[in-house]
Length: 469
Image (cartoon, rainbow, N blue to C red; front, side, top):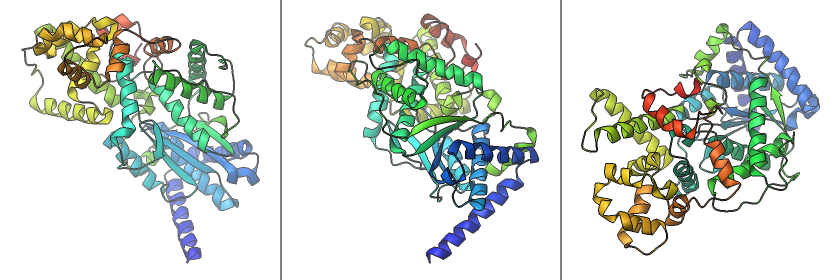
């Protein structure tokens, strides 16, 4: 029975390969052959291919689809010619959390390439702080998201709650943490394959080294060229930023886990119009590569759009007063925005009250923005202002005030008091300030003071206006 099953699988693999080759242009098929040669050299020869693992960070864009489908074709082609072929580890990247549309896309893509039932392929996704097998309907538990939600809230409250800072370069540390888990679980030779051009890779490497210099911890080596070490060090920095009031053990030069090399294939897989047939095969609404800057395809730009729209309504409400109802959009557009924001709050495990509080960031700097926040959204709490400050200072106050603070912010009293008193030591403070200055594409934001002005000037729904700097 097992032989029959293996023969059936081989037949399916042959059909998938034939289908892929039919939809590839002649230039892409030639590039795939060159890719196979490059992978054989990196693995150390044909005999070592069976122990060779490729890590692919997969986003919902054209380049990611092109890379994954070409790698799949190369994997199946080698399997027909050699006793063994390389293994694939596909990490679905969609931070801070994948939406239903993104999960639907990945499900269709993986089914078309017949990846889910192939033992040579491992599909992974990030769920909170953990790396779990990919699933269209992941079994999420509220406890899994509490550390991620708390890290998001702390970061936002400490840095003004601006959307670009909130979903900025901090997410790259979370991605490094996920890659560090892959390294810890993998054995043998592991290679990260990427389409990023050299300029972007060097830019990312410079950002990594800058982060390590800011950490200023013994045992960290900013000039290290060991990619595996850099990833583990960034994962440590992710823990520092997630819990800035606590100390974390610095990484060591450990040999545990797999080594890592980087294989750049951007010169081989330069997408051409003739390769649109391959996109149609995947049956997915792919984002055009030119619409997003490099490295931003791993993150949910739609989440940023919704945060910007909510931030703009908050600014308008401040200007027009708390009693003015803003109904400037057609009813259908308002309904669509409300549904999108409901999905965002579900993704981030936040209530609307907590999300609005986050974008105001009223507790930072000894409650500098607390009065305006209370006047605008919670006027009934104005009489309790002295008690709010007492509670944030750690002094005795009514239990109702303590309960309101926790419910409105989503943070514990210990975390709120740390935000209020700016009780963040080094290196966390330097890291928080540095990460808040760069967006999801690692582009430098103008200044912390101009973030609020930018939010007022940008049109709602302008998901990529922040990149045009």
